[in-house]
Length: 309
Ligand SMILES: Nc1ncnc2c1ncn2[C@@H]1O[C@H](COP(=O)(O)OP(=O)(O)OP(=O)(O)O)[C@@H](O)[C@H]1O
Image 1 (cartoon, rainbow, N blue to C red):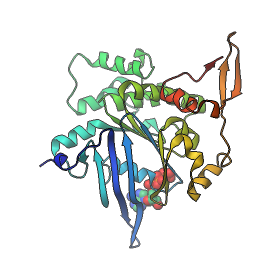
Image 2: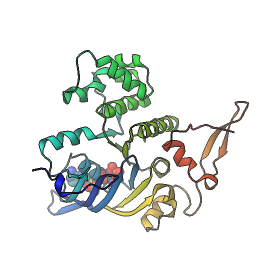
Image 3: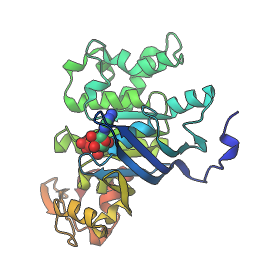
Image 4: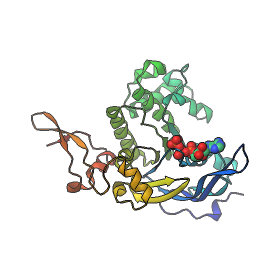
């Protein structure tokens, strides 16, 4: 029997982690608790960042959310269904509903496959592809990630890292999922490419009401892209904050994490590319306090990185 009846879905919560624990058995005996009583929620159409030092349990958490690894304790509930207790139909729906994008796009891009087949593969696997529609579908998804249709005939090595990441995103959204999990998905890219991928993701989020989970080390990125952030330390979420206000984090570990980026308590004013009425470009300090929403919303609401003055 489905367990859907037993768990009332919350109005806008799409994913909920309740007391999630993961213990690994060590070869030397004993266990290592990689995740400890993690409680977090992801709202529909919103982005949640998970930050923490190396080894704090972020990837383990992502692997459990993706059902690549079982839980030792607790529950992960998606749209009201406990993922550890799904029937066949729910399992299939779940596999469509949540997709992952990795740091290295090569993980999603088989070097021997053309872009067309890379993007279509999930549809083949789910038996959702109608003969004769292939090129139309690939063209449509390439367009969505701002790549030309002709790219469908290329191999991964014939593209840049940023273009491969766009193909990985097209492949991740071809099943029309509701949640995308990004494991350090932009950290290997240079800053300007990272910026353009952020705009793309913000636009897709708005268009498709997608929910994102970003696992990242880069707090500035999380602050820009996410609504909420969970700070992990030694397997536990030590603080959950409005991502924009991460500077106000009170947990000592959050403060340590922040101090490596900018002075705690000081505003972080990134330089912003500004274009004046003559089309001249200049870099100016972005006055965050003057417009609290600007930095986050320029991504979240798909504004351009270049501001006209
Ligand atoms: N399969 C495994 N068996 C045993 N221990 C594991 C396994 N996978 C992860 N761990 C341990 O669990 C802890 C959390 O690892 P995890 O990869 O989740 O951390 P992380 O925060 O994602 O780190 P990073 O940022 O470096 O990727 C680490 O101490 C790690 O060594």
